Every structure is written in structure tokens, then in C-alpha cells.
Length: 89
Image (cartoon, rainbow, N blue to C red):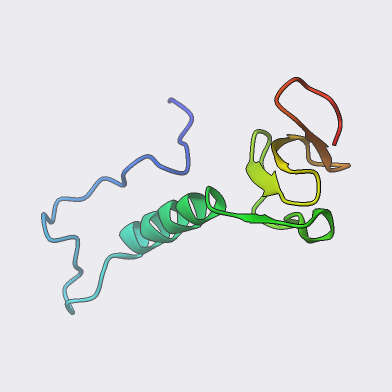
């Protein structure tokens, strides 16, 4: 079985994605929340002290206004942020 990722659309037999009581199916609700969180991280920026500490994954983007450039998370434990040429920032 292939590894699922956070953005793989859940399978459903109901085209409206609603359960019997008219509520969004839990799998679809979780998918929408993950998609929203992922999109929100693409807009994040701030000072070095405010770098994200949650919703972390290798490759996560952040624009650091203190150093004036975009950075990406290279490792999670410990958190290591690098710039576009790989310099630890």
C-alpha cells in the first residue's frame, strides 16, 4: 500500500461529503484542516524570535524579516533553518 500524504483526498462514496446527519464527514473535515494549515504557513513571516515551533516539517517555509530573506526548515530536532543556498540562518 502506498504511503498516504496530508493532502491525499479521502475516499468517499457520497459526492456531497456529508454524513447522514448533514455534517461534513470526519475524514473530509481533517483534510480541509490540513489543507488550510498548509496554505496558511505559506504566508507566514516575522522576526527571527517568532519562527514557527508548531506544524513543522522539513522544507517548511518562513520569511524572516529580521534577516530579510526566506528560510526553510532543514531539520526538526533540533530546529535548523537554512536560506536558499543552505547557509544556517
